[in-house]
Length: 493
Ligand SMILES: C=CC1=C(C)c2cc3[nH]c(cc4nc(cc5[nH]c(cc1n2)c(C)c5CCC(=O)O)C(CCC(=O)O)=C4C)c(C)c3C=C
Ligand SMILES: [Fe+2]
Image 1 (cartoon, helix red, strand yellow):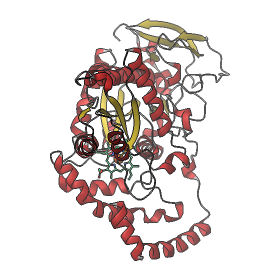
Image 2 (cartoon, helix red, strand yellow):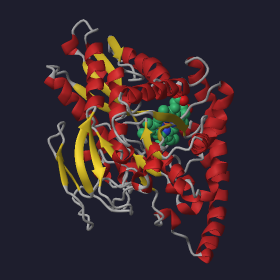
Image 3 (tube, helix red, strand yellow):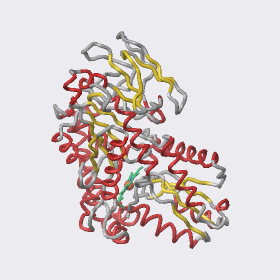
Image 4 (cartoon, helix red, strand yellow):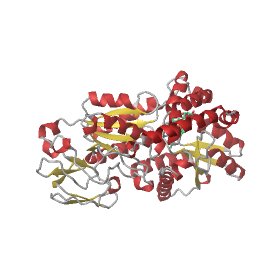
């Protein structure tokens, strides 16, 4: 960026795919030089206003501001933390507020301010226990999340006691799993390595950033990362979940926590933020997955005979069917894109998708991984390549559930040749693609909106008290009922 003067660093894009920008058709009422940019990757038009000049540097498209110092609207993806969840509409989009797009103040203020711009990248992940002693408190944090155990509003006051109960009952089984993979989760170490690799890659692309790791249920907690971001004086932030597909229970939960923190803090609420909600459809990711699959297929004696078995983390079916979680749609599209890429390379293997890791008595997304493995074995499939597709790092569900439990089940069911594709980790083509995603998101960063969200909808106090009273009585009897206790013991854990 050495050749760019301060006033020129307004916006920076590199091969900006329009699918990553929300509300492209929105027309600004403010005057400014129009521009159109044909994105080389997808051959789509990218349009905007209020930009006086377009040029390129180091492969980045630079958009220069108009002369006004005032806040202004544009058709660039203006971001808030309160993007709504609407099925496929999230596909490939950066979180957008209500469709209005705003240049962040920091981008159009004085030159000296721009010169001080410090970009931060916040990696979101789930977190995992470092030791076996951490397992129960980690599980408590997880089950206390209203995006993981989704209680009706009336029963939400039971969230923490229920989390305490479930975490204590579940802990021994989880501890067994973590003990089998070395006594703790490798997630923190791998995520730290990914953070370092991303920083290095962005520096190589002449976009210096600080990268932070924000775990949802264990250290380093999201709150810790955000405090560090404040201390470091970050002036623009890109939020990048390490989940390729969006789910209410993963990316959605972390964003909700961020939203709460940002809305309450006068400094954070003015910080321009861009959130990349999902990125499973990015060419770099799809190609990196196809590379890994192709490589593992070649380790089989007869690669073309191998069934490619995509195993995705499940979610309860109500998330998708009642709460509008786009996770299943995104997962199916993701598998389709990976298979298209493999076909273009001459790989025409049979493939299937199933969902793993269900917890509790409710129905989860089907088909279930264990059931499909048994059926495939019974149907005569002899070679199978498992592809974990919800995560980009190794953790308990790849190292223990897939490599141990599912492998054993598959071999017992008649499958003779078993293989598993490793998680992407720090694969260089993947890290490069994440770096590109960050660069593409930067121009759309905007300060959090102060508009109210659905979370602000308050109940009438009398209605609330009544519901609480009757809810408590009902919950008390439910929890004490012997039938309920046996259901919890027998079916959930
Ligand atoms: C009970 C509900 C759960 C939902 C819904 C859920 C969704 C979900 N989770 C991941 C990724 C991970 N889950 C991990 C651990 C984990 N998850 C649950 C429960 C739900 N997950 C539990 C109880 C646990 C603890 C482990 C266990 O006891 O089985 C992890 C961390 C693994 C580690 O190594 O520590 C990840 C990562 C996704 C992607 C997802 C929805 C799409
Ligand atoms: Fe999980």
